[in-house]
Length: 218
Image (tube, rainbow, N blue to C red; front, side, top):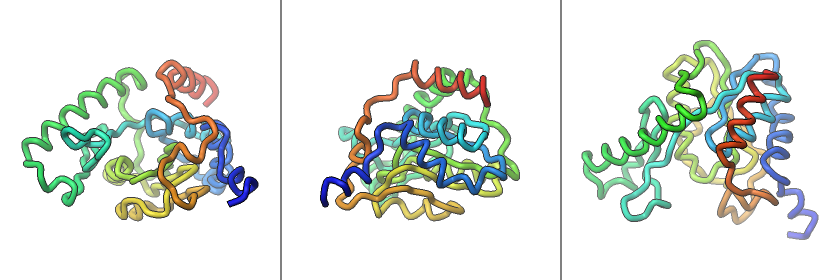
């Protein structure tokens, strides 16, 4: 790959990625979609998508279920309403009580985020709405699976998954979405951050400021 090709695969930051992703999502503008940013990093991308589409934006929470002793290895995920997805192959060495305990721990952290990011407010009604789930990238896609199911259970008429970058392979359950919009799929994909020039932590104070701005101008 030459230097020009490398530049084409790179976003400056999440703001740049969100702005460019929004252009691909413009056909949904007339549907007045609900935009959900997967906290944390997905919220920043979602903010710029929502600004371009003049759409309502909210943070939504899910967390990976970490394998005991190896927190980087996830065997599933849980969404903020308790919807869980467990990859049976990855979790086969864990008994039900161990899985329940891990889920409970992650839900406690999610509850804290709901308090901090939405002031304990519920998710808005989704029935009959087009919903766009936005993240800053898709690695395994596991975290998005229970969020997709959450939206279906709440009656969303269409669920779109959107991200600036992904690998060419991710959890097959994401194909239950009505559409998956991804801008770039780098060869030899190994991490979401490889597609960004600047990809650091997205601290809570910046997230809260974006949410305040979203409410002010939304």
